[in-house]
Image (tube, rainbow, N blue to C red; front, side, top):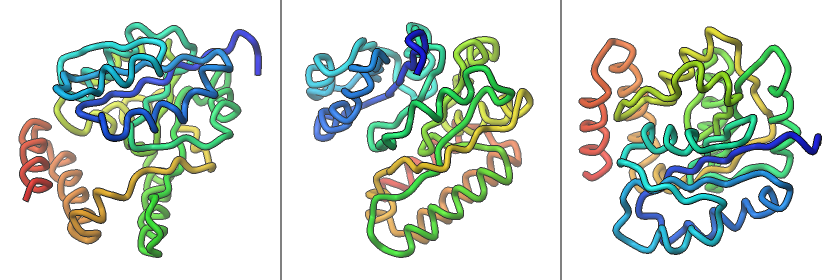
Length: 232
């Protein structure tokens, strides 16, 4: 890796005191290599900020909302490449070589394949379809740890300030610049949501929300539908 190459990991969080230390501990090796970790809190009323502060390079407090938080983190980032990482997602050891591929190549953004953490065989099937869909459509989701050159992200004015589907919306614009680089080494994302709410119910919910989004329904109404469903 070139000494001048620097990655900024941006992690939006809210009420993550139970898991934030584990999530950030997994990133300490990157910090030791000279990369930076930026945590953006959306107004947590627990110990998230206190626990995260000693384990990151910068702690930013932002208005709540994943898109707003990620834009706030990107706004103070110093790296050439921005990597947007959910708190329940773990990166593969090979992360930096993959990010270097978009440094000066034709492809200016990308995402990782994803694997759900649960051991059920159905989770392997779900992960496979998520990765295949992304390859075919050129659309990435936040669970896949999207990454993009900072200059390109800034030129596109970052994530749209919408309540849901900010990852899909940005992918649609990035896709006009280049196809995504699809890193085959998977990130591991927590399968808890699928286990708690049911596999088929979660699949149906996500496809239904995407279908409504592509038909033009507002992200605000989709966010309300999502929150209503996951709480029931």
